[in-house]
Image (cartoon, rainbow, N blue to C red; front, side, top):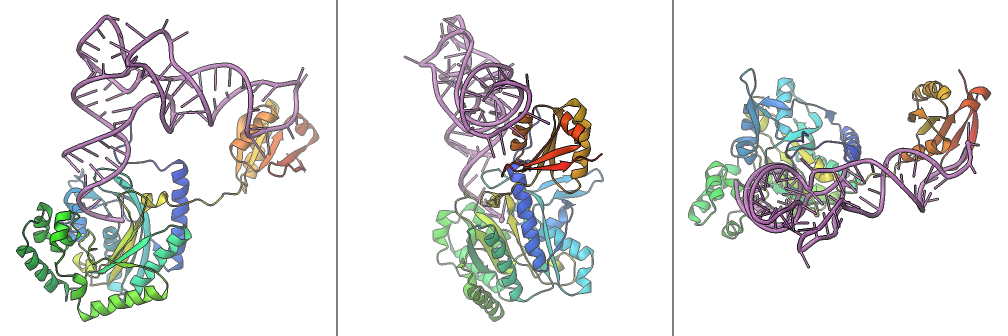
Length: 401
RNA sequence: GUAGGUGUAGCUCAGUCGGUUAGAGCACCAGGUUGUGGUUCUGGGGGCCGUGGGUUCGAUUCCCAUCACUUACCCCA
């Protein structure tokens, strides 16, 4: 027997129904907010992810499905969605055209990690990206959109907010932080490495000992330039106005290198240790890092698998038909009726003749609302009966050729 | 990469202090007098007890190894 690879799951059964339901409704809401569907390739040049997600990130450092293809290209299966969308934005020369573009996407992402609850090697994200809109009002708007999606599915969450500053205030802060780290003894190995590669991520360290050492570290949020500070305050005030609750987390830095200014994460309790259900923020420099014209960007991604346990499907109302044959002679007639009715209805059937009772049991099994059976009597009288299985009402209908 | 937990029917799990033919519930199929369902009743199919080795007269059970799944660390969605 061939098993699926570790950390890879089939989309099938109940999960498949929820998945479709989720994508359909998120897509609908995103369209209402002015976003258009985009799909980018799963395979991209490795350089794309190295330059966008960042070599210092764990994702690029150790979690990528990377290989050399038959054309000797160094390629990767995408570990996240933003890089590809930004690349597509530049490929289409939208950066040169100017204006505002909004995209939503969904599909599989790949990271070579140890699977656990809420973490797979192939998982699925639904995400959005806005290009060319530097206003913090857009940041607020996509958070409101995310809230609307979660509210639609009745998913509880906590929103955590931070600001990562901009090219004006981040570098001096970073210098400050590195100085502090240099003076601090006893940091864990990872932090010593991060101090060089990406010092901001030291703040994010889960090591308890490091936590204690970092208590007096300079705080990013208190060292923002006036523009960043104003923007962050405006974001908070908009969210207040819309009644969106949030927590400020000065240590929220996120694992990807491309974020600046607004960074946020939606977390949910009770779904295991992997509790981030959505994350996003602003990435105003990313387009130019990837050789496009400087263009502001902001977006988020949701982890679909992590949300599926929290999504409850609405009661589906019965509406399908079941049509069965009572004799060998009526089988063909049943098939004709089935094909004709399938033009506008969901029809279940079976290719064998059997008793009314057996057919009705089969009709119940597929959750049909209406029941039709055709046997020799029906062929002779040119009529058949439609039975409503819920109300038990029966209605006679003419059987046409 | 590290640590714990679990592998028995399609699914959820019992069980064997080592001993004849390995069980239940659910699901599936058939039937309950010859054309009216869901609940019920009866019957049926279906298991190399994860894999390999060791101890033993005898292993699904004890021991070792291995693989898979799972949870957690780490990191993230």
